[in-house]
Length: 115
Length: 109
Image (cartoon, rainbow over all chains, first blue to last red; front, side, top):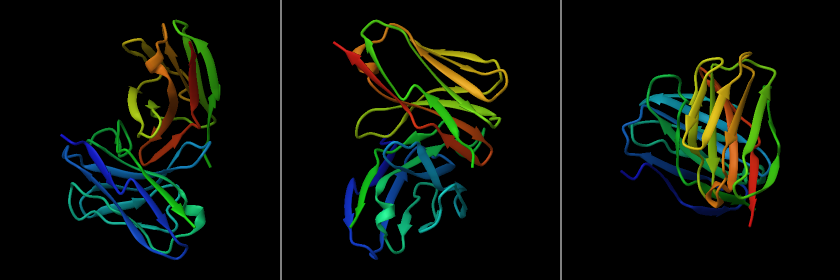
């Protein structure tokens, strides 16, 4: 199993550009989440999904959209990139059970810079 | 909003020493989680705790869920070089999760 995969690993955008961060998992996990990690801060939840067709907002959802059309994939879209969205983005997945963000497997991250 | 206070922020220890770090919150959590993150990688789950007072071990790691449900600690015994990294606690309730800011562990040669 590849686990949780994320592409791209690095990305540089100009302010106002849009892009999609890809996330896929091959563990048949029901739950998937997106986080951002900024220097000196813990991870902050952006959006999460408890199953195909179901998504919900986390702590910092503004400027980001998600959709979950399949169990395996959970892309994160930046509609109009801003410098404040410069961060490292992590996707995570977990089995259904004790809550959508419990015992998660994390991907390797996407390092995004917005100029 | 909710915050977790994780301490210490960083630690410098000698190989073979024991390590202790903790997280406290003003809010109650149903689950406490401890993760380790190596440079350039995503966090990896170390221990999950589900009951107040629960004490759980994973090899040289031991973690406890505080009786008040507002705190948790992680101990590492007999540290080795591969323990270097950043350790994060996280409190989880239903559809919310809050991460601490991390404890960066350095091991001196």
